[in-house]
Length: 312
Image (cartoon, one colour):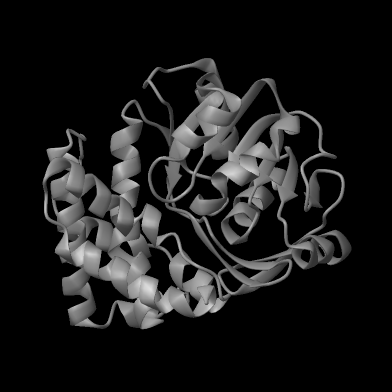
């Protein structure tokens, strides 16, 4: 397959390198020119279990800060920050052909609707991944894909040839991937994981090794997750999770102690976070369904206060 990763930061590069190594033509798209230039010059450095390995950017792996030069792709994997979704897909329509699959693996809710408005609902598939990554610097990442599961599915829950092809490609690349016939439930279950650690990691500035050592942090995380579960069920979303501790445990499973949630990574780069699309989504859906969300509302308020320094 010819695959483009739109928003090739830490996670995008981690998944892209796996797909490239399994024989696919992969284009890593990132608007940071220093990141792209480093990869094109030195290759992509991927740290796995503390050891570095370099994937040269040549024959099967390419890097670019624009989509225009790539040509039509078979799969467009969308991993940009939630608040950049519309801008990113609008600037990338040149690589979307009649048979291109546009797959969102972003955090939060509602990206599929934005993508569908630009490229058409028939091209869009949804998914969630528990894989992660940490950006160490331009062209250098920590890969957190080992043992981490990804779920993808058609928006209507149908089993199609194309969803099976994408799943097969991911699995062959070592990215454990399952096809879901309840993708909205799957999306909500991944949201629970993000709710468990994202905002709290950003607020406390703690990597997972320390975050999980504070009982008060765990208590707050479980309360936030329970709120989100209550909201989902009130809104008619089917969940297989019945204990708020399950997402808390799953968030850190298989990841090194130095791993940092994406919200903390954003703050450390001086950028705003995706809190509006994670904890903020819980608050908005709670308002629609009449379910109080005081814990998630407080976490949103704290993150907004921290972000204020970047927006003034």
